[in-house]
Length: 309
Image 1 (cartoon, rainbow, N blue to C red):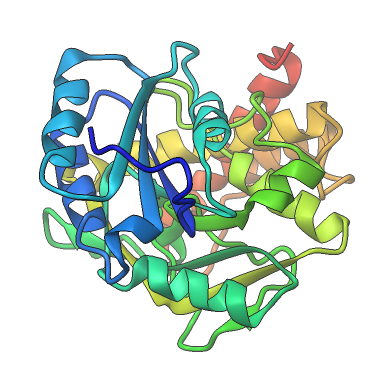
Image 2 (cartoon, rainbow, N blue to C red; image 1 turned 180 degrees about the horizontal axis):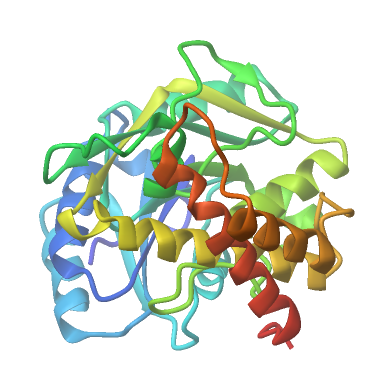
């Protein structure tokens, strides 16, 4: 892999956490080595959360075709937060950016993130727009309100500071290294772990930033394209995401980190009962309304049989 002079500290470290996805990872890395920055101004760190020779070989082959420093490491502890924290420990730059292994960065992605940090010294985190690369046509039942469940987000055409609970998204986010030094890394009780669809590790750290007076910025110029495979364009997938979201909210509650203190066990029991006994009658998406009881069931399951111990 490309060597890097000890004195050449990059401006930004890009961390790609991967889990059994060498085919999509290849496209992610190809987009990263084509950034509109001096190749020595950034580094790429691939954290393999399911160590494989195929992934290691892919990283080596990619590194052979660029002067950008590319590092590879295997993180044996399964879990996205563990992998991200490992990447943070390896990163050398003052800015640490994250992109998913099934996403592709626009060529000006990193330059756009860095421009915000230079213009706004109070920025503790910066993220941008995530658009879809659709494998199939978008189903008619998939409303705009459900796009976030596919890691797609668009907060408009204006660069601005976000007010909580507005947030940037894990597929396109970055932080000052000093943010981690002051507030700590990602909470390892949260986030994806293997095939589970739990999350909220990126939400929780942004909550910490706001709680301690920091700022999170959104810039539409920092664009990432996220692949949407056919298996995610099913109602079953959205039910699984809703259940996982409920579990994630319960973990925040169990850890004393929830920003909805009144939405405890009985609030969710009531939501589940109401959704079952009194199905909502409204002009919106009926499918979308059926996700509420699934979310409540996920919360109740995790709250009573917590897995964060």
